[in-house]
Length: 237
Image 1 (cartoon, one colour):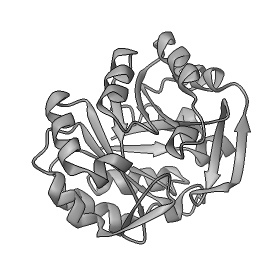
Image 2 (cartoon, one colour; image 1 turned 90 degrees about the vertical axis):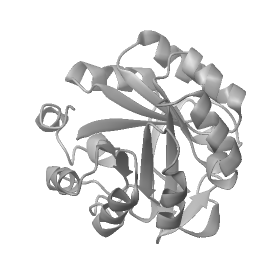
Image 3 (cartoon, helix red, strand yellow; image 1 turned 180 degrees about the vertical axis):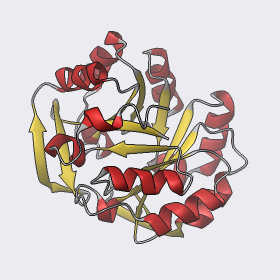
């Protein structure tokens, strides 16, 4: 299993939110590229970069993302507001290793199918989940669909991975939603990445034991709850 630091962008800064609530911003660092450099210096091989402003159609951090990609610090998976084929293509052309699509992908499965076949192995679908229901539009809309039903619909597509974020655990350092992740891994036909709630090395090991291929870590790294030096080697691949 690979550990992936989160670099969430808002108004040009690197931030961490609690519980998926934009009003509850707990961490703000004004130099996101410096943050990314530090994660790469410590040995992390992949970064998870999300434009939170674009996700809510409140702005864009595209220039920051382009600057970060130009540095070629690590493999980068980028998401947030990628709701057109052109936007995905541009992000991949700019140097992203993977493009993360969420809202439109989950609301327009025909578009997702065309996208996945155009870019096989380069698309990660982000399924943000609150109490087993899919949320879209930057966590503002809840779809009346169980996550497992959605996962099963995606299995025929040549996706790079499925990223499941337990929004109800996001930023709270209270542990992952292990029953959710275990069920998703069992149902999915592609690698599963987990996010939300990771607060300790034990949480990472529990995810690994359940077959999760990667874990996105945010608050735990930024608050020092997890020492990055202790996880880089154990969760490098």
